[in-house]
View 1: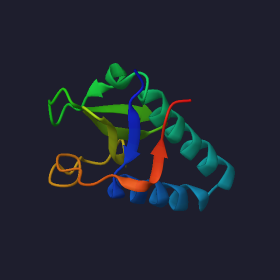
View 2 (view 1 turned 120 degrees about the vertical axis):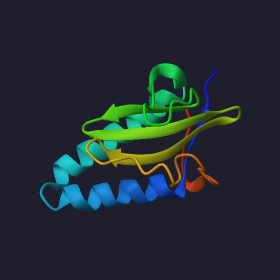
View 3 (view 1 turned 90 degrees about the vertical axis):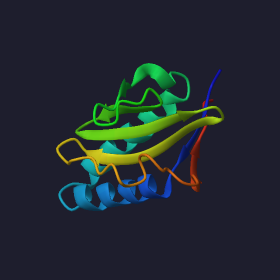
View 4 (view 1 turned 60 degrees about the horizontal axis):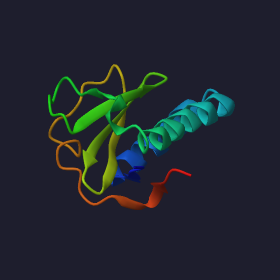
Length: 114
């Protein structure tokens, strides 16, 4: 069963910030990084438990997958997967933010298998 993948507002903002930051050095590399992050999210729709449990949270439903040096953090829910945040692997995870309280997914980015 393929899960529906939705993006939280914070995750969408993270993607935009990554694109802006990386494209300052290389538009081609920024495109490759974003493509890899988006493909990672698409793959999660078929294999939601393939990511590891986020060590800082230790909750089976909150997992992460690495794309380049970025942590794609997501929550597995009954109705689908919500990408909560995309953060650089060296940044400390802010547990007070959207990761635990994801909020309403953004309708701007919804990825489905197929």
